[in-house]
Length: 378
Image (cartoon, rainbow, N blue to C red; front, side):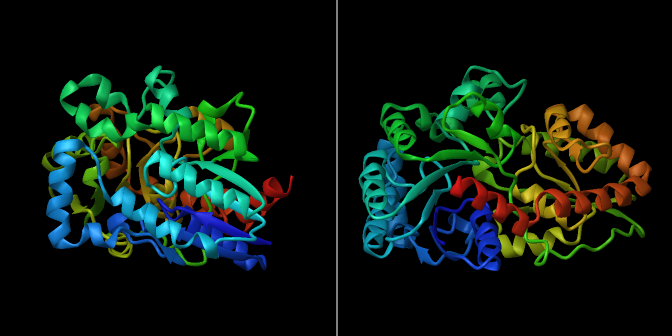
């Protein structure tokens, strides 16, 4: 089959592409590299002009006054000039409801052309979208990435981009997509739960992880336990990284000789991954029920990851042993869990092994690619 993947946020589409190619399919990936992460794509729609130094100052000034980012227009224009090449695909899959990351009206215009010249269209729910956002606004989760917003008005500006998914213009795009897609696929429990009962929902397919590219090295603990925190300022509050930082302050005081803490900020994907390799424990995110892509890749390396691992996740995969630490939005609980690991280093080694085994069983990129093919064909 010929498959077109539009958009990339987390390396999901790259790993899926690798699995599909392994199975003999032809795959094209279009995206903007997701800013500083710089994920590889076949055709780039990165807003390079808008990111250039002279234009960047003007762009920031315009955004400050109008809250409009004209990089959206540049991405849309770049995609428009690719449209003639993106035809005769059996499957088109969108990473998100805003996969081109242009204005809602322009996105509809572009996707109409894509729909006209290709066959089946599918949508992924693997990040904020209208369905997930409405579920969180109604506080149906016991906690979510919107929890900090509800707890403090001071943080509200950080969440403006998320509320765009409930704007009139985006809802028009959302309804357009749901009229034209064959189905919507969730990548984990955080997106599957809000989609339950939706007529377009075709099921959960776990994130694909290419374990051939990710080397597992059994953890060994010599003098210090190394704890890693990768900070992305764009998602600092909604991932609960402030809670991790507060917990680390206590841990550093309590176990100054036993731990080494590594913090990095806004690194490109390859650099981030290299620094993470040095660690035993990885602090990923707090406000989640299931693991996102960064957590899964760290687990594939055999790290002990603090992330979403709620009861719903454990029930779905029928787990009897811990494969990750469920990071609750409570600094005292985070300190407690970290302390237990530091005082019982054998648990770190055990959970690290469990994590890798879980990834190999449930997230193997070739088996996941096969699951996508089953859904697309049906």
